[in-house]
Image 1 (spheres, rainbow, N blue to C red):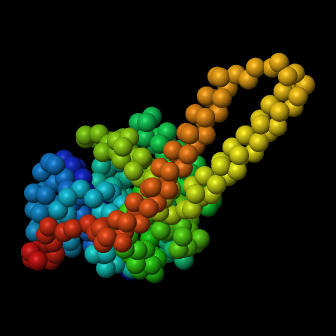
Image 2 (cartoon, rainbow, N blue to C red):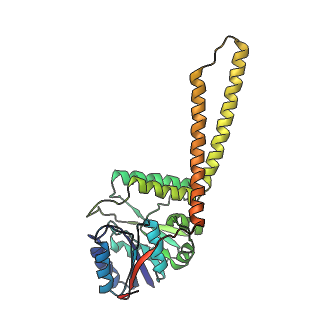
Image 3 (spheres, rainbow, N blue to C red):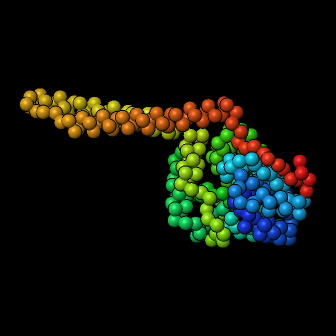
Amino acid sequence: MKISICIPVYNGADSIRSLVEKIRSVLGESMYDFEIVMVNDGSKDASDEVCTELAIEYPFITYVSLRKNSGEHNAVMCALHHSTGDAAVIIDDDFQNPPSEILNLVSELEKGYDVVFAKYYIKKHSLFRNLGSKFNDLVATSLLKKPKNLYLCSFKAIARPLINEIIRYKGPFPYVDGLILRCTDSFSSVFVAHDARKTGRSNYTLSKLVTLWLNMFINFSVKPLRIIGFSGAVSAFASFIGFMITIVEKIKNPALTTGWASTISIVLFLGGIQLISIGVIGEYIGKIYLDLNGTPQWTIRKIIKDSRKQ
């Protein structure tokens, strides 16, 4: 069995060499054949130089350098496209996922599952990242019909048949877990260790998390549109009830003066719902336009494979 270790790299110059050396040590002593596919997602540090040196030094490394930052999930999709193994293990470049746990994921995958997610006893992320993960889990459960007991994690092992299905997606805004959930319900999870970040800080800013959530909302579910329709129906019903109450009160008390504040509140409430609805519909239309316009998932600057530049 051949395992492809897929690593999206972004500003990982200080950690990527140690990670590769540790993966080589762990898998070199195992029963598996392996390759490492590194995708540099437009890093601003010396990641390109370090990854190039590693690709030249080790023939089992395939290095792909992208022309610009396309996002983690786009980089993962690129790595999966260039993987050749019977299974792929996706691992971040920050060393928070110990490479020794790769064998645990693969061992579980060999039981016949399409994908095996890692789950943690204790996550060593910041409070902001942990809250973001909880929100992401709730949204995925609601919009993507994710089982409540399944934790979506970037550290996971995927079997080749499922990889082949995932990489058929050509849209510019991939969400890997969304693609997995819409292709299979054969999954498992295993507990793994999670270490504290040794260098740098998380590259996930609030804006990047919001972009990721929007990709999940818009690309893989129509529920936001249904929520808009439901909100409109509720607002219309509430307005009708309020209108009827006003008529009844006016009949009972002809001298009753209607309030300016309540009128303005209703107008602002309905106006807010309309603007939110237009915004959500605009997101759908915008993504459809970019997709039809042929926006690429990534663009490649160079590939180094088998120590030969292509």
